[in-house]
Amino acid sequence: MMDPRALATDELRPGERLLWVGQSDPARLFTGRDGFLVPFSILWGGFAIFWEVGVLTTGAPWFFALFGSVFVLIGLHLIVGRFFVKRHRKRTEAFAVTDRRAFITNGRSSRETDVSRTDRDINWTRGRTHCSVEWGGSSGRGVFGGGGFGAPTSSTSTPTRASTGSSVLVRWRSTTSRTARPWSRHSMTQPDADGSCPTGSASPEQRALVDGQLRPGEHLLWVGHSDLQRIFVDADRYLIPFSAFFLVIVTSFLVAAARSHANPAVLVLLSALVLVGLHMGAGRFLVKRHRKRTDVYAVTTERALVTNGRRTRETDAHRPDWYVDRTAEHVTVQWDDVSDLDTLFWGGSAAAQQYANTGLDGLPGARENFAMYDVTDGDGLVAALRHTSGR
Image 1 (cartoon, rainbow, N blue to C red):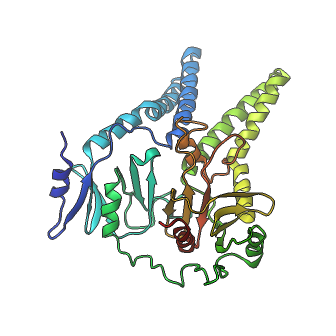
Image 2: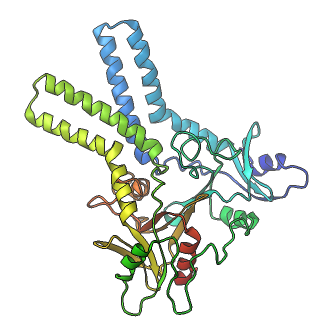
Image 3: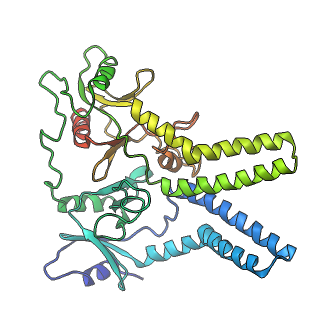
């Protein structure tokens, strides 16, 4: 059986001190991303197998059979094979944190990153039984390269991820430079002595919008908004190809049905699915951009709230169950409102997390975390929440 400490010790450099060592839980195979990958892989594999069977039974040229077999193999890997690969990695790789590096090794090869880097994301599972820490995976702006959806912009070619228990965070934080992101009065929105909040990243119009929502005796500590320039999120790595594939399939069926003069009910159903595909591929980004233009975030002495002047959502500012996802330029804060949902797909906590901030969230009947997404004045937001929650 693999000994993580022995593997990590063999990788230590002269004078380097090992602070923590562990490994990923082999029993945990599914993640929130499988809420997209499982249906996508079934759709891909099903269509590829349907194509291949049709080619083989109709006596089509051998090239078509060979072409289809490639997509069948890809589909089988997406459906089943990738889980064997993932389980093998979990059984053979050790995670380690030293006073200089965070690294992953299997004894033959290793990947590492500077432990003092601050462009990291920390994600907890329901019940805080597992934790994933990722460096450089979502700090970029682009979709294809140059950032979070392509290769990270740092010298590390692959994001380094550790999926373990809570001790990794305690020890890792103790090695991270506290001065890497200074929390000064120039970088935070600080409350005045009377409890009011000076103008920070918000415009006077946004500040006035929140002032109109204040209750008697309530003081504004921070006000801001989501960054309009940040449209894509991690989930788009799966949503974009899935929506494109879905749209091509349903459009093909609609064209075929129209040419064959199919039943009008079938045409209506397929047309509705095409509209769903168009929304997944493009419409949701318009929805998301509209929200970013109209929603204002605020923290008061009593509440954290999101308002556009017509509709206001809020949560108790004293709640301690909020967590921060920080990239190089943005901060997202979410309050845990869905951890009690335990189904995998629609309506489950994993699906709620994956649909968050994609333009597909907020649909009727779907619960979601109360959240403030992609805030540039992240230090000011976190400082105000620490003030009210006592964390």
